[in-house]
Image (cartoon, rainbow, N blue to C red; front, side):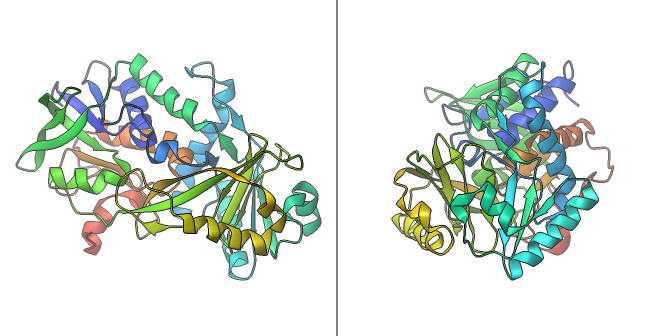
Length: 387
């Protein structure tokens, strides 16, 4: 590998975790540079989510990555080598469902059992004793996941970046990617616009596309394989404090009716699980989604309708048709690495995703098979799937 840089585009969880692993293993071989066009890392999806650490997901192919990432997040409060104090509230996650949702829960429980992830089936009495706010909610089965919880996303993301910087990574904020110089099947340099408007080219041994909702645009600059990445908008609502809310409640997710809640600052954080396609941006909020949330709560937890909403925002989740990630070398551009399409699992899986991406980069272009085929970008070339 040449002495030029590995340039990571994006300082959200995907890019920050990749820089964290790569800077620690690549000293003396090449420079790690992270370019982020915003003035603050995590301004988009990485800083606009519920902070959920959830291993018991519908996608069995992702279990190993997600479980490894969750184990790291749980370890943060006691880690002496982590540069930022980071809180993890291990209150558990309670998944409830009825009818078809029960099939989903049973499938998740089976996959979790095979992966060694603890789960418990709770009775209605157990659910309503633990979370009386959802007493009477229509569900047939309830799956409790005791190792799950909520991480402080601000300090978690900051920890990755601080550790990467301490290992020699160059984190450049307000540094916008505007183009790439290519030759043959390789990127030779990335062109960035620095603060003040000056443009410069950074010679690149490898380019890592960790641009979240903008990943397709970055891929097009490189001439990479078009992938069917779809940014979607999802809303969150924060309520005023209420005396009946217990900060020890688990994160509750109704997989059948599509809504969730967790304690937050004496009140609740509520999400209606909306998911509409949206252009890459900081999305506007849609007033109609608050009505959707109220409609769902009316049929599941009417007591919560009396809690005033004090803030609302939206973020983007970037999805792929098979529900998996895309991590690895592009089939067309040899030194272009995708780390994208994390689809709402970015916080949970970030540590393992960054480790996987760094390992692929350190293999250089050895011709070895992908260590995790379910997330290999080449799967879309084989299927003939394009954007």
